[in-house]
Length: 346
Ligand code: ZN
Ligand code: ZN
Image (cartoon, rainbow, N blue to C red; front, side, top):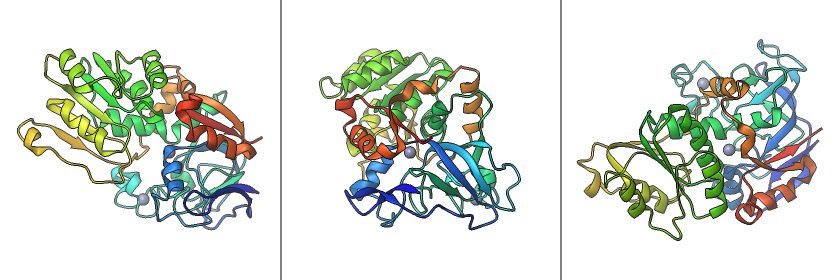
């Protein structure tokens, strides 16, 4: 079969690889029908994630059809259509028992990281019973790729950790796919304002269409001044960091109001200054964490009932074997006006 293989920093190729086999009785092998590329894959390709070994197939998102299941898998059978969660979980360890699946002692984020991932014609999924979700009949499978990672990430790490509440004010720093996923799911709670901050005018325009009430281009405008003006100098109740660089996390510290919550979603590679000299008396909470994907079933229901339109996040489509071009498009997201690119394997 073919797979997108990591060969070290700035080096990837579309290679022939052996089709994955069942290794443990709890495994399933899935034929991928739709997958996508994540900002995290670009981090890996920059060499920022050194634990990824040369030869690993990238990708941790996708939907597909079960090709084969191990003898201990009871919830899925050959031919079932499934969503692959970016987080693999055993369901039995101390963290799984607390729904902290990202810390699963036998799984966590391993796909396209510690084991071969989903940017391939087939993928082996460990602990299939806990790590896959059934696709309901007549679903838009392409939209459900957004449930592998970005929607639960935006919702859990941004909206839930950020304690978005009715009538509250929310600022989201970063209007990439994850920031936009937080914007879409924040609206479940009807906050009074959702302020979107990003240097890309096209993404801000999309954010406005998706429900942002104020957009700020922080290359051209002073986000702190504008937010102060809109909040009577109080700051926001929730600041969601969806970029992963020091400047954006610091910005969250300048715009958070007393009693507010900063929810970090971005993947940080550098240390960030914590301005306790400003924050020590402000009753703020800072939340961190990787997605646990415990909300995937409820998000699936909101998509099924059309309360949430996940397909809005898809801008480009490629054949799976055209994945190198898809990477070029995704790497030049601003120029190409790209959010999520879908790779189709049929
Ligand atoms: Zn991802
Ligand atoms: Zn576990």
